[in-house]
Length: 64
Image (cartoon, rainbow, N blue to C red; front, side, top):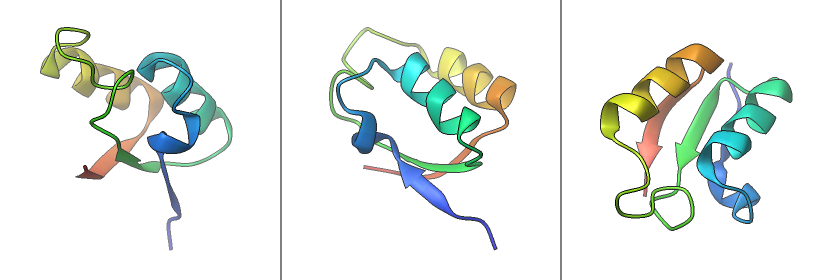
């Protein structure tokens, strides 16, 4: 069984630092928030997010 965590718990951090903290805590699945600052318009490109998730060993089966 894999436990996941929502990036909204780290809503005060930009996406990359939030994902790094989540990965460092041992989580491998995330629910990605589409609210700023995580997915603020123009902040990240889709391929950048995918590469960051891959580099950190994270999967994001759910977004909101």
